[in-house]
Image (cartoon, rainbow, N blue to C red; front, side, top):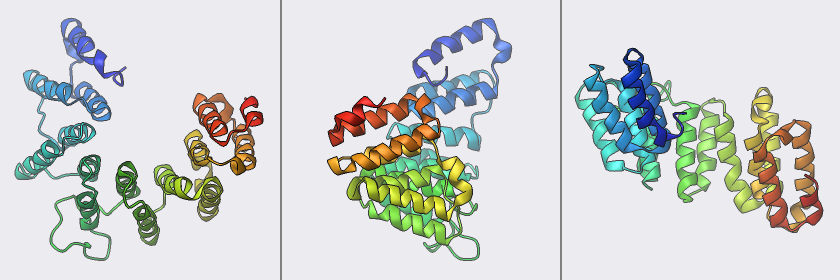
Length: 277
């Protein structure tokens, strides 16, 4: 229910009146995670005040990270950066999740260059960071989640999409195994600029290079990404092939699969494909 942010204040008021024994730190963190998804800054700030009222300390790295994520989703870069700086001043050490929240804040505010700078300041094992000086962004080495955050920043802003390819290559060169998010972000710009066939070729190459990922990558969302690349009448045979492959993997049980397929069939203008579902 916490995903439906508008219901939280009412439910929280009910809890405080009927079961105050259930008001603990985990409950507040659950609400703050919802705020981070929805960008509900007002509710997050209310929850911080309420935590103090219940004598629950809101000044730890987990709470700060969720607040920065909330501000990022709300596209409030200045407040996110100020909160991060305050956290550093207080001696609270950021985690890898904290730095990703800040990267997202820069990305959502169209400051992709600064988000990239954070990624380049992270210390790779066995070498100095790409940017000189000691990093403030957690000593954990870069992970696939860091690369996914940065690739998404480029995709959201639709600028320098070729940088997604460069990030992918850098990630592979560092022996970081891709996950579903990075695969999707790798395929999307290829589908957008080179079409469905190129997107499918890339997907096939990735699953050949990382066979152990194949089962994890074969998801509805992954199939929907090449669907989104279908735009030309000549894409109809490949679209049909992809549809059959999706049915083989039982994706027909999801509305996302059907919706993505039908939109693609409309774009390519093929009535026969539209009739199949």
